[in-house]
Length: 233
Image (tube, rainbow, N blue to C red):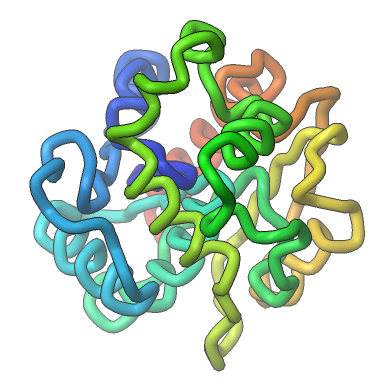
């Protein structure tokens, strides 16, 4: 399962998933330029270039049926990668996404990427996107702001390409207090596949990837989808 982070996030955020889901899948966090092991690389400037970069890395690592998971900005990346990887790897066994309306829905909020630092942090705080330990020490956020702004710009300016619909299942999860999604927008994921699309919500906000209900949802889906992908055809 290749995991794509939210705007400003890194592969480290999925580290605990390796053990949690080890019985079902091999968890492969995907590192984006400008963070973690790719800290010295410039942050992404074009969505298509970023997708091409990540697709090349995944093609080198994939060795069988695969899943794609992404949260928020990562949900868009996972969706675009499902299309980019088709020629070489075929479609994923499923596309799992959270915290984002369907790719045909424009970003619903005023852009973050060009805000002054103080207002940017306020907006991130409203989305639970600032760790509590950093609230009183905003200067510690400074090294991460260029990557966050670059990711946010790509997410906020994103427009769905002219892709054919997928044929794999789509699983969608969102917090019902998340200001970046709405029920109609979440249902739009069903437009992206000829297979089934299931949407689940829980009492949570935007940053929900450690929420117990989300983790239970992911475990249930990963277990079922991995078993289906491994079954003889």
